[in-house]
Length: 428
Ligand code: ATP
Ligand code: MG
Image 1: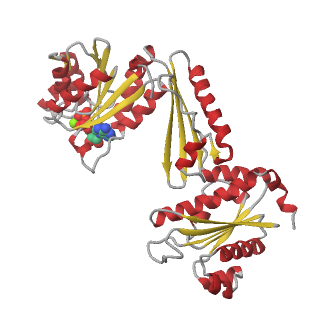
Image 2 (image 1 turned 90 degrees about the horizontal axis):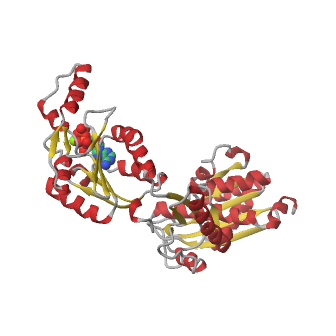
Image 3 (image 1 turned 90 degrees about the vertical axis):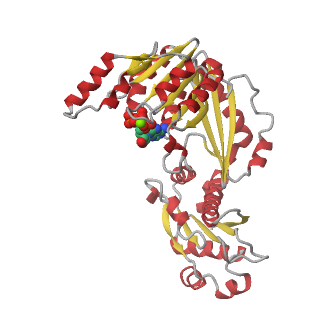
């Protein structure tokens, strides 16, 4: 992100356990969200084990790159808590004993009727020149250290201690020297691959240095566009910049975008169906109920979702939906013809306005050269018409199921966006 250096941050999470698969650095997620709200952007995020030398080295490097370094953890009373001494070493300062901090810690122990052990004395040392940040929920105080134009902040590791301390003591200090304002917009698309999408928006990538950034995050069945803008002057200006780029993207991508306000695909489809007072029912083979599950993930789904059929076997496709046995034999269960017949059967049996039918090969077994794993036929039927699409999805079983449901919902969503869709219910 093209933010001024005075707004750039590195978060250093301290703890050897964070370098194992057993513990994750979640504190930095909280901090990042808060920092962004205050107009700061995290430029680097690192994890360092409990070792003074490595920590001092990393801190020294960080101070060459960013204006603000926040260290998380390693403020405890034990031998493996190295943050204080590492910061002192990196800044070339002494650690100073503060009797008043020791007194506060002793009081805390006395109030809880626990005997203080001597290692807790360590927590009464601060980096020379640091401001002490009180810890309302624990013994280790935080520290705010100015070093020339740079600032180093030490926060305790336990999340409830860190959060309370950040909001009470760090946020107000950062607010006072706020380096600007950040605005974000997320545009969610589906039905278009990453490269197709990129070619549609060519020329819209913002130039470096203008305080505007565009990131494309692709995952199977979905591509997100994230716009982030920064203004030194006001939140309004940051929002105006972000909205400007979001609008240009929207005009290029139009119906490929299903949401620009944080809605999920199922929510945006739900809104379209509710607005039009129309209903949908489903017939699912390879998705095994997953499509119905997603459609009912939205509160109030009974307004538009009638129900569905999980017809995994050929016998149920015939028995429940009336798909002719001969058709399954001649065309195969995974075929355009069977998908269409499943949708038609669902429509006539439920009386819904729309029916979605999915039949495919989720894998990992069951594929053949003509019908490989990932081949999925999806039919959308309404009274008066049907649309059948073939897809070849990549990935493991769950991903094939996810993309199938995604595609099915997207077919209906796009259909509903067509001006004539609202009249479908009257066509016979
Ligand atoms: P303490 O006084 O409890 O020792 P501390 O400041 O020394 O606090 P750590 O010892 O590093 O902090 O971590 C204490 C606990 O806080 C860890 O066991 C872990 O559960 C949690 N913790 C530490 N760092 C993080 C982090 N980055 N993200 C989430 N949790 C963390
Ligand atoms: Mg500790």
